[in-house]
Image 1: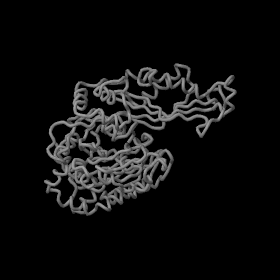
Image 2: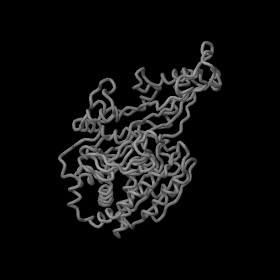
Image 3: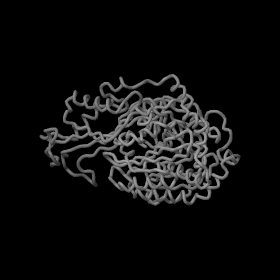
Image 4: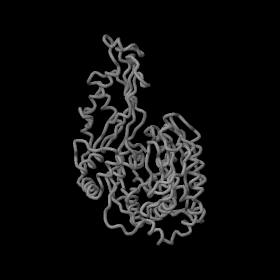
Length: 507
């Protein structure tokens, strides 16, 4: 799932307390006997569930590095079959393959599941423990965590769903809903070919029968166990913006001695000039011609949801977690939450040109690259946004500047009134989890492929438990919780089983 920060940080910025908690989640589970056999099966399968996650982490599929393909898809298919799916197949695409699986429980309703089997890159030397080991570590006040690349994004939450399915099978229970699973191996490069996988006729036909699609989530705030239910997500576009002396027709074709700058044009400076036209001088407002015309203002209901979130969350703890002291323009907490939900962004992930090693090297680079991502809000689309970016640069004489889009998709929205949304809220309430509703997560996932035409399905995140560090060193997933308000992996698996029954019962 694409996040400029990390998914848990975004959750912390939006998590709130609304209404009185019925009870701590642990107490809710203790008073639930209808799933006693499933709970027993989950406990009996605990070690196997943890090992399953560790083994999965040991096989990182990294699209940006072309690592472990097709091995990652093959393993995802095996995981689905082992969990009880009767059919699972590899679905090819122009890029990395996907996996499509179905579980027919003979139920009246069908639920869609979205998995990603790829993970983000990592630098092992930056980690507290080896990123592919999945080591179990103690965290005071939190409990036992499993650390590894993909632990929370998304293999931990997905493994929790698999643990739930294994337990249902071990308990001899039929699922209350049928399942359709679609998994991709390119989410971390903005899903450039996932639409091709989902729109295969037999895949789309199976999904059309579902009440909606869920991406597994470790949703709980680590302090109070609160959950934010997001009604959507921003879209994302990944790209490289490139200036080269060869394409420009000015500057060097390759690196030359820096003394020549007195008479030779510089591709890096041209890249800086082009980038500076895309945003306001402070970098905080997108200035691409026509982009602001695409942006749909917040509705009155969205503003009310944000105001409720602002009133019941802690600004100081969010700033501490992010490592920042001030918001843009010293705005208020509520204003920052409005901006997080409503404003499109352009972010420079990295700038690459010339020599970047120790010390200096007197060269004038022949090429400069900006790794850039944009976040999109309603009513923006990937196609129109890219077209406007190209036209903006061309109008200003930057026709030689390359815009190489590597992936992307538009924003996603699901109504509060959707049965899928109401099933999520009902499950959280039954588990005594304090819940608030927020317009959209500022991170991104390709949910629009489900919510947009031709499927037009509800879609969202669901799950209890906690994890942090997506895209960062020391990524982890909570296995055994020391906080009674926050669920460990076993209890989160039981909560997912409960959710399946709630989906079946929600009209």
